[in-house]
Image (cartoon, rainbow, N blue to C red; front, side, top):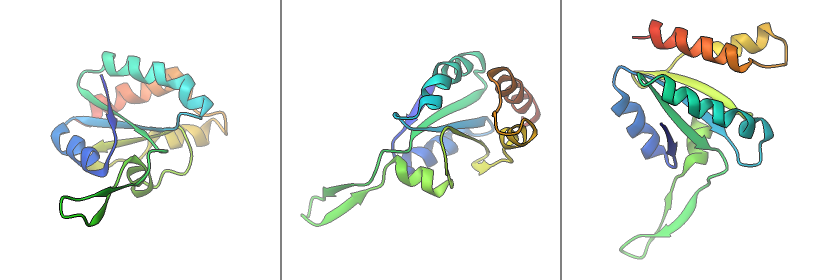
Length: 136
């Protein structure tokens, strides 16, 4: 199952609760065609790899002003802040975390190797299988 992340707090909580498990984060946007194309595949991977935590962050979720109980304005920082903090520059972006720490992104290496076409779904699946076994 893929968990939707809507705030920095929820993101940190998901990383903390993952414990020793590998966490894969999909940074996407509703308007992004490639994001829409890979979403069903990403969700299918979450069913296949129960030992991996899958998170999804919509980078277009933004800061929303709210009024606190004492009538002073405050901000609830949503998913846009997570994307910014994780230095997401384009979509879709996949990042891997272990014990709360970002890991080297093997997909980036695949993209470099395969020029600009990006990893195929099969390559993505192979990388995920490798990481889920190696980062135990």
